[in-house]
Image (cartoon, rainbow, N blue to C red; front, side, top):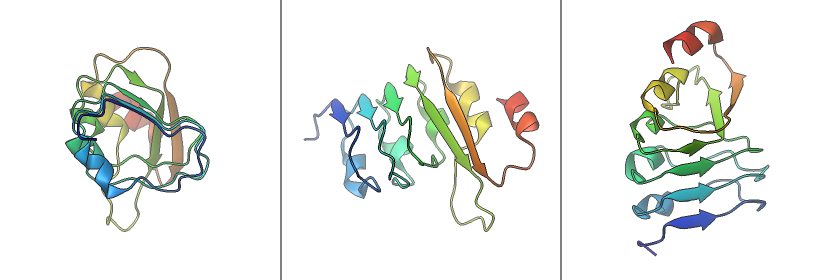
Length: 126
């Protein structure tokens, strides 16, 4: 499975991506759309899946972890869920992480789940 390039888990009832998904280092496409129960993924998913070119998580409740800004080969990102951790225990994605993603194409849904104090300021940074 380490050579897997395409993984489609769309429309499943998965609640969290397992840590083992980070071993799929050749993965280029990860489809998670319409996984309405999906709320969790490994904190280092974007640091390990550096070959990812397409990430579709529309219609999920997934708060993205930090590191997505390092995926400079990413062409498709349909969803960007932001949830600020008030206690500082989780490193979550910020809008400013988008500024390095210069190859993105198409539309992007940005969902502010909670805790973002100034979304306009965050958007300007991005």
